[in-house]
Length: 341
Image (cartoon, rainbow, N blue to C red; front, side, top):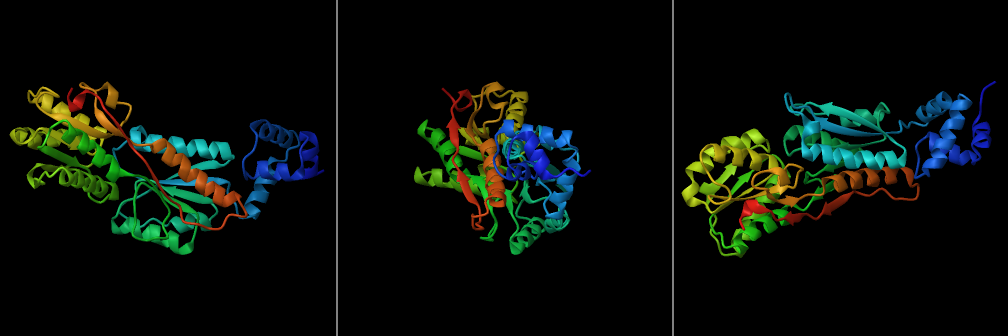
């Protein structure tokens, strides 16, 4: 005899509506209630029926996260990706949804819309997007279809694109102002890849801090990396050659700063005596370097959790009107020894 939802509800001691919500991953739910319903469904062999019902309703129960596939780069070991994914995972777990990780080729246009058409995801979050044409085309298609999605930490000109980001302009401004307030005037800048909007935001903050202090911008002490430790190490050649022109340097993330400091020490530099360094991210490694890094703390975990919560609320709250997500979280400067005593 086929088990029905009423029998599951009776065995679990809950309503049929609660059984439906638990098995379809809809809405917040007490963990004890969720466990009770799932156990009752298992006892009555109702799980497969519930899954079939989910697909019949056109729902997968999954939040998709799409990341760029970069050969030889271990994305999950980087602070940026691991923290954002941890925040997303916490929100997904608490809402009773599944998490589906997908990889895209950054060199081609990714068909995000097909993820929805094939019922693989109910909503998606895009990590590592940039301002290159292939990324913009795929994201703009999503916006045109008015599907539930969000881009992490990358701004687009399209006002229909949902974004959760950090205020990198203000964070960079505070970092450079910290050096200026300590009396340093010759402040260089090692920035990240220019295809990311947060690289431009950091540049804007850097320029504004110098301008507000009446310091003329010196283009010769602006350097470019790609947010990797290796690129920071490579930049050490140029920075070392310019030491006489520098009091301090602001670096766009901790990984590049760590690579830069390693390269400078290999060339005989004493840090922070020969060069003051301020970085960005406040990764786990920032307080373990020698000297410990003064850096800007970015709430990556909170950004990931907020993006997932906003999307899942849009799916589960029937009364909520469709809105574009536009959230900007604040950063915080963490002062340590690398910027001087």
